[in-house]
Image (cartoon, rainbow, N blue to C red; front, side):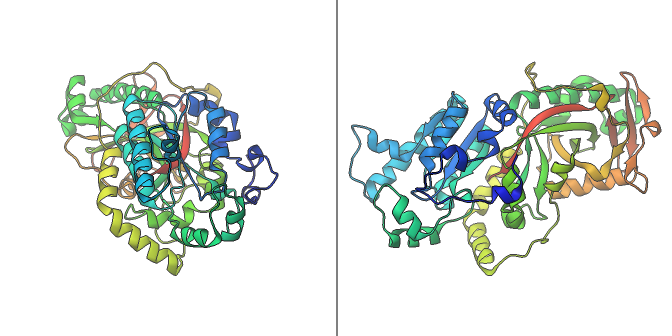
Length: 438
């Protein structure tokens, strides 16, 4: 991939540059990423950008990369022979309702991938599609043309094909609202999620040989696990989250060149272990150097501008209930099901015998069927504290200090009635780096 400085290079709309040179995103140029996303099963690309910034070109690029994609746009309403050809406030409203209905039906049918191409200047114009994604378990990739285009009212007045004026763009650019996710992370596909949850069941069942585990959980046979823990519908390894799980806390991080460079890119998810508490089951994920640089889990490390603060407050007041509802949908549970299709692989020569908790993050796999989902930051603090009690001064948990269980995996007891399971080998999956939008 390009370095951050080259990613920051921007083009003038209407220039002679080829679209393939302009829109160099991981999901348009990186072969491993494209192959993974093709087979993902639930991807929704949401293209955003003012008129004249190459949305049609980017849409065509995505359609070329993903041959099975379905493209939806409000503009297509005006190509319908039964539609009103004149663009006014009434017909524009109908065109967006038309597009939303089409996308909704596509989500119901499980079409993959879905490409939504509109200007999407304001957050409320995007919100319906975000709601659909939460409802039908789609992973969103925001394809924003202004990340690659220079935009000023004067430039856009020249480059757009609809004859829009400088004054129009002066007004519209001031209306632009960023859609910041509440978390970022590495999102698994539906097949890998199912496969991984099956592996977790095997390890949990093995813990029934530990008498203390059975007494603490009041579980004595495999069937009881299905009633005690419910798997999460959406599985992702957490990269960034704020103390209060709100978008404003990671705004500057999300808009950094480093995040933009790797946004939408495929990464390896290497599972080194599992943490089991009375309320949660989580996977312990090894982070390579690039992934560690994308992790942000502190509060208020970035300084916001006055405009940022106003935007944050307005955004928070307008969408707090929607965001809360969608976050609950993303964190909702489902049934344990098994899929034989997976990107899973393991290599014996890549075994990491000891666990370095300084190079790890977490993936929430399941929760107690009676518990409400807690903010990721709270869970990260909990898991980190539990592991710190077992690790040495350098943050290392040594394998030889853990008990050996049948099946060649190991485990140890942690404080507060928690357990750490260490598989015999590291399990590796593929995942896409993006945001959790609510």
